[in-house]
Structures are given as structure tokens and as C-alpha cells.
Image (cartoon, rainbow, N blue to C red; front, side, top):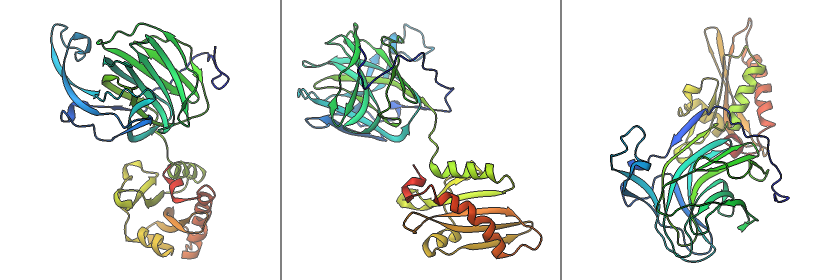
Length: 351
């Protein structure tokens, strides 16, 4: 029976073709080390898990695709090795490199040991250590279940009983589109699609419980990249003002919060460090005007709700007959004013 907080037997979850894919290549990590870009933490009691890369001999069930079944090879796998028997102890290894909304994530797992528990799971749409979804399989309990964790409390599960033999590789897949969620074990959907509105996006991570020693491999995610607000605004304004030659937003975003290009009508320019003009416009909150053959550039400060300059917007326009500096400012200001209605703080631009 579906609980009131999780209402739906959706007709079907149809993910669009992915726009991007990320493969978690554990082979690039030295054995004994944790993979870069991940953060080890814990839900509940006890300390974080002991996550590290190990190498193990793999039989044909996990051999590289296309290899001969008789070949035995070694592969780097991610292992959770802590054996803390605390009951309410859920080690998490969270990928901090990206926040995902719509996605399809697949990993293989093998439960290796554990007296109290033998579990493997994928936590997704993680807000923090106490708010996320998780799909997990248990070899001791022989179950496949979905949970929602809210403020550290696991709400009643949805799932089925199913054989999950220890010491064998299995495949776990989670698909999300909007508020629809689908969970699969070994390619089979064992309970209907779910609908929940609590978490529309978040980080992804590996999950275990108690003293479960678990291995993970072949993890990959296909996803629709998020579009930060600054890029949404540039896209919208370029559509509203089709005669614009260029529109760029510079803001603190890089290493050490250096000022760089975070949005542009030309995506190939993204990440470029700001020039002196853009830096001065933010620091001194003074506009800039430049003129070239057939075009003019105006750089204006973009202010947050407190009136502080948090970005510099460069507007490139065709020069018109009798073009003056004041006329150029007058043409550009409505565009920046439109942006300011959507920006409360500097963080808004990059979220």
C-alpha cells in the first residue's frame, strides 16, 4: 500500500535522451585511496564509513563488456570496509561534483560481509545527510526497498521481498524525471513507479547500513544538465532582443571566487577570467562604454536586493546612427533591470 506522502502509480516514467553522461572511473584512483570529488559522511549514529578503492579479481559476470567470458581480470572497485555494528548507522559517500535533477543512474554492487546487515544502496537527490531518497537491496533480509529520509527519520518503506545472494554482483538502477521515481534491480522493475514532490534535485551517493561490507563498480549517470539562473537569463534576453550581438555575465565563481564568465550567448567562452573592465565595474560599481566599428559595448553592474554589485553584465549591440554613450546606456539598462528582478543574492546567479 502506498503511503499518503508517496502517492502515485504513474502510467510510465519516460526519460528524455540524456544530454550528458558521467562515468565514475575508479580505475584512475590508487588502491587504498578514496575517489576524488566524493565526501564521506553518515546518517544516524556512529562515524563515517571507510570508503576506499580496492582491486579484486572479477569473473565473467563483471568482466569488461566485449571481453571473452573465460577471461579473469582485475578491476578497481569502490568498497565500504567499516564494520560498525551500530543499528542506526548509514555510511554515505556523496558525489559533490554536480547536483542532478532528471537522471538515470546505474551501478553494480556486491554484498561481501556483515553480521548485522548486508546492504547496498544508492542515495539520491541528497539535500544533506538527513534529507534524501534511497533505493537499497539487502542480502540478509532478501528485500529491495525505497525509503525517504526526512530530518534523519526513515519514513515507511516501499518494496518487495526478492533474493539478493551475497558474494554475487547485482545491478541497481534509479531513474528520476521531475517528481517521478523508478527503481530497478537487475534490470527488473519490482514495484511501480513512485511520485514524490519532496526533493526535485540533489546530489547522488553510495549508501550502506551498519556493518555491511559492500563493493560497487561500473557506476555511471546520464542526466540533463542543470541550467544556472545566469544562463537562463541570458537565453531569455537573447530571445527577447534578437538584434543583440552579445550578452555576457561575469561574477565570482572560480577558484578563490575569482571573477569569470558564468553565462554567455557563446557557451564556448564560459570560464574565461574577467578582464579589468568587468572587475572594475563590480568593484567600483561604475558603468563602462566602448565603441568599435559598427558596434558598441556597455558593461553595467548587476545589483542584488541590497543594492550591492554582485556581477557585471556586458551588452554588445549594433551601433545606430547618432549613437551616443547615454543612448547606449539607455538601451542596455532595461536588460540588466530585468535580471535584477530575478536576483536576490550572488548565490542566485550560479544556482
